[in-house]
Image (cartoon, rainbow, N blue to C red; front, top):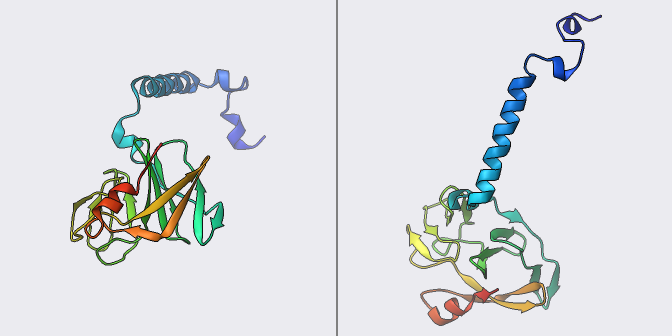
Length: 174
């Protein structure tokens, strides 16, 4: 018998001296998880979701089409340079680039914001400018819904400062 097996109890996990500690830990972890579910996960943890990469389901006349997400979160299509965001029952599509100097934006989960890694401009999930060197919100695309899909018109990009009405209308209530 190998030396490692000499120190093991013969009756399995139930006879292991660490088993009561493991069971207590599992019980406490389960209670904690159920408490979070019952109380609702705090917003800062819900916002810490990592954006999912996505590819267009299909292309309609040069415009990408995507399934509508079932819950709040962000999806990034690097090939089409589109960020899709579902937030507070509204759907948005943004240009992947920061409006300041065209650097690809990133999601900062700890703050629940988009951020430009170059000059640290910050934006809310709906694309509204918060702070930094940029002078406007994230550029939005026009959306069209068809059933459980949304098509992003990449030729209809709205800049908040130049087209405030178009920018405001480039949101799809769900």
